Image (cartoon, rainbow, N blue to C red):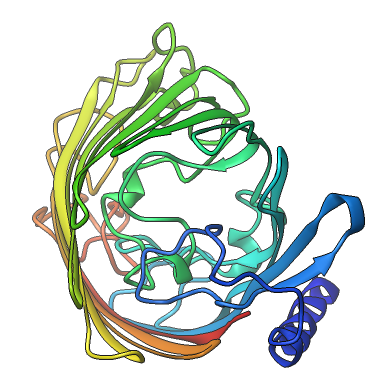
Length: 382
């Protein structure tokens, strides 16, 4: 993997120097998706592959520094640390009947309220190739995808550079991130529809059905509904979260330098074997304001609560938590830097009966109810 990192960073330097002279697209590619404020390379490096057409090579090379209160005893979690947040390269063919997308490398997945996991370990979750799929596009309005696909659920993407904030939020912690399966996509005027048969929370068991329907009420406003559930009911007693159903309602608004997203989420984990039925509900709002072509300020607020049950989805039965995150971002061409200042607090005052019985909270004893983080990220999107 060290050789892969060296190759990726070398590719970034090469891409920076030749992207203006390569066979390049007139605008940034659609994959990987970026919700802003960061923008992809508007002149991605294109390689002439003869009869195959143009193959585009892009990527991300970023590092992070983290400082936090009430760190846990989890492996790799510390009061302060340095790490790679992304060392990835993407290769894709983005036109024609047969297309493909492949994203490879190392990555960390920092998320509010959870211990930090270093990229060397976090990358094991989805492997060194976290996203890879083949796409058949017989028309501009319909296509089929098969492989390792980004989830249709939620309002935030998986990797740090894709979102308004460096860290994912509390609601994202309840959602699948990447699933293996097949997906059909259809667009007709203001309506877009996606349906997928997949393995949900990366279980390698293809019994999840998920869908997303979006309606563009106006150029500035889009409403979406997403849902996912197990076909035939729960059947995995060893991993109750694999049986989870998730539902989202999402509104996105864009007005000049402002962009905003508000969404609600409900999840349900049915009773399986010795695990009792439990559920969560919550909502979040994300917003970003662009001060100009280089500077922007993003923010996120959330609240989520777990109902009674035996599976700890948050910080114990009947626990709730809220968070706030502020993220200033600077980008100049391919280079960027940003910072997260975040705060998470649970309303559970006692997690365990004694220090020898740590709860699922913060701190080395698991008994703290809040955590503050300051996270810096800088790098290049080539």
